[in-house]
Length: 476
Ligand SMILES: Cc1cc2nc3c(=O)[nH]c(=O)nc-3n(C[C@H](O)[C@H](O)[C@H](O)COP(=O)(O)OP(=O)(O)OC[C@H]3O[C@@H](n4cnc5c(N)ncnc54)[C@H](O)[C@@H]3O)c2cc1C
Image (cartoon, rainbow, N blue to C red; front, side):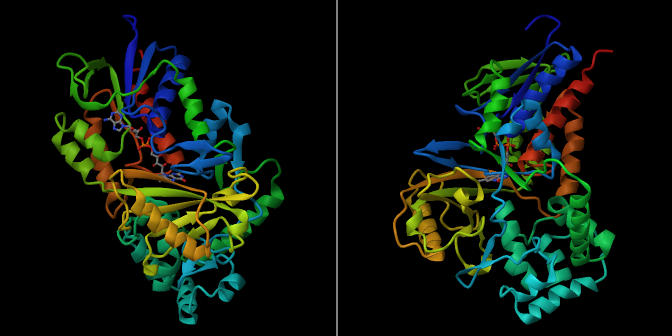
């Protein structure tokens, strides 16, 4: 580091920290600001929960398997990293998914979006809901909007569409994303789009019908490439992590677990204390960790901030990748996968038919499934003895899909306390956290605790933190 050069440290090498470090490096170069960027990662690899394994022709996702394309930050970063040629969409031939009802896989009716129908005929024909349930869902058209604006997802769906819409569809769909039951999740913090729908159209069903009409019109009016709703990469999600890491070569320090930070007594800067007692000095500091870890690191600097961060609950989850011979599958696997309502009393939250959902995930004669279990499951173990989780998941998956043979392999990946739960009141808690963080100079927070848990949200969070730090240090 030269005398004029400043230093920026990013703590945490998941997608958030990688995006923050990348943006700090790129943007400081563009602005002509001499800046040394260091990314500190506790483990021996970057990517955090994102990890792809290649084994015998299978492409196995240990964590996330896709990102949503309607939030722009994922695609934009891929364009900048020049990896758009590696992007793939989901299989256009199998758009549907299934939901489990009384132990059977039933197709989600065409046009149904999370909690409400966007097309009437498939909805009316669907055996998922009773006649009374269907009538209750249709009442959404007549129910007036509510003014109180922070409501749980469960309360919102029950109020507008009734209990069946919640228990049989919304809960499993949302549970599959947030690894939690939707009783306490804040609608405003997780699915604000539904609030806008209610506000603009007075009804979710009317909003979905209008959306469908607009989509038809747009597809008539526009041409050129269109992205699939969910995207991955031909060689798996690791592609994004590797591209970022390549751009940060020389900046990443592995096995660098941060224990605490301290503000410098003189000047505006930070001491970053590693677990092995090494102390690094830095001018700018970004913590890109899940809230519980951030809280621990911040304890000495601001006990109040640490306490507020601890108030964001996190849950653990696990994926189990299972490979089978194609000929052993009784189910046609004519969809992207299935989700499981809590009322089914299984441990599974859902299961993707990975090699159907995306191409080239398994050799020709095989299929790859990726099952997902969350906090509510009794089987998630933190111990190295992993058999119970795999055995339980395997039993449930094979019963639902009527598979009678053993898998070729099963791979368990545990993600301890990795998924933030945005409960009712989340946004005001985050506002308080941000107000406290703003009081600390040359300091920024980023990650999945604040404004979204999906990969594009985390990228945006990391990039925004980087730009804030640079803006505050712009030479006059
Ligand atoms: C199983 C699972 C499936 C998911 N599926 C999807 C999906 O399909 N699509 C989607 O968009 N999102 C998905 N998500 C959500 C999304 O992947 C995460 O929110 C996001 O990847 C979090 O990234 P992060 O960098 O904020 O945190 P993390 O990935 O948790 O990374 C934090 C990093 O910090 C390091 N670290 C921890 N403590 C320290 C310390 N003290 N010092 C230094 N380093 C430290 C860790 O080793 C880790 O590398 C999924 C999440 C999980 C758990």
